[in-house]
Amino acid sequence: MSALHAVRRPRFLLGAWPWRSLVYLLTGLAVAGVVAGPLMILALPWAIFGALEQRLVRAGDMPGAGSAAWLAVLVLLGAGMLGVFGPLLALPVASLERLRLRLVDQRPLTPGHARPSAPGAWPWLRTRYAEQATWREVAYLLVLAVLAPALGTGLLLALALAAGLLAAPLIVLTTDDPVVIFVEIRTLPPALLAAAAGVLLLAGLAYLTAGLAGGYAALARALLGGGEQPLRTELVEVARSRARLVDAFEAERRRIERDLHDGAQQRLVSLTLQLGLARLDLPEGSAAAESVGRAHEQAKALMTELRGLIHGIHPRTLAELGLPAALAELAERAPVPVTVRAELPRLPAAAESTAYFVAAEALANVAKHAAATRVTVTAACEAADRAGARQPPAEPRLLVVEVVDDGRGGADPGRGTGLTGLADRVAAAGGTMYLSSPVGGPTVVRVELPCRSSRPGS
Picture 1 (cartoon, rainbow, N blue to C red):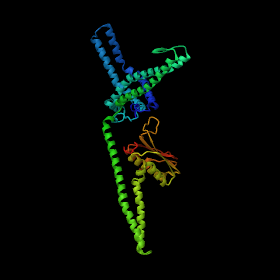
Picture 2: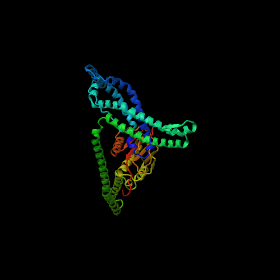
Picture 3: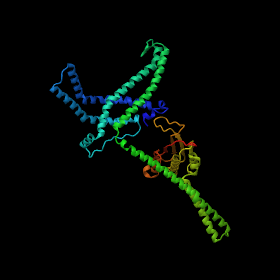
Picture 4: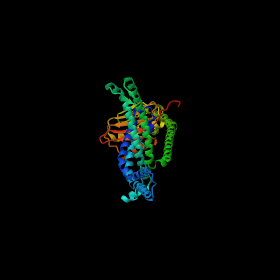
């Protein structure tokens, strides 16, 4: 999520993005002020060159051989100072700017620096001065010194104008002095119009600030990042292939469940009935009756196991009634008291299936390890906007499932494959899993899955 994406959202003005963009631009002005001093020292030969050139132009003299040589020396000296000391200044500034970029662009950004071939100062310097990423950061340093003050100063002036317009009614009512903002205002009606114009200006400034911050952040990402662009095509293809594998896996799971339910289970039911009828036809107490009876009981036990296996592959309740009913059925079978809070529309089968099996695995872990006395399972649809407050949307974009228990806590993914497998399954569906399990509890497993509600006929 970034400021440029947030501008297109209908609730943009009510969220945090205008304020984040404002802080980003104003802190850029502060950073530019800090680096201005060292940059002025590095650019001192160029400043002297400019002053000498202007002096010769004003005097109307053509520079002689000596003057031209001195001018050339100044130009080369300025370039040399920037080339030698510029990277040493740009590297820490770039690290700070990558942190500051998170205000308006939450996507990860990694520097493009290579690891030195050996420890020590000289290998580090040789590696840094020889790579493109360092000189892109030097270019960003120059952009920062020019662009950040212009954007920050312009924004402050616009905010001052908006504040003056908003304060116009108060100034007119409390003082006899006129308000001069383009025109002279002495009475209340024009002052109220000015205040209304100030409100509109503030709203427009919110969008303008986010747009400027987003554009500036895009430039910073292009100069300060390393390696993301060449990998973008490969990452997109990996994501698509992963989605295809998940869909194929779910289709195969459903096929196995259907074959077991319609094939093996029906034949086992028929076999159980035949054994029961044969048991009735044999003399009671005979050896044959006892053998058939044992076979009948084993067939019934196998039927129970097969039903559990089919239910584990893909619960019929989940397919027919949806996730809330399936979670309620799961809670009834749990050995620990479970409270389910789920009011959901029908969602895509992949999202419902992943959420169900995450809840089932989490409840199984609670029963085995947590020593809990109660568990709460919550499932809800929320808007997938991490920057602002989550709102239940008309068209859900995020399915959130939380399993909270009051057990002993201390769950560690490194001590087993269960939690790691859950995280992998959620990641394969394009979601994210969060775990909080301090020693002493409570343990919270939170899963966020992208989804949209499925409507009949859609």
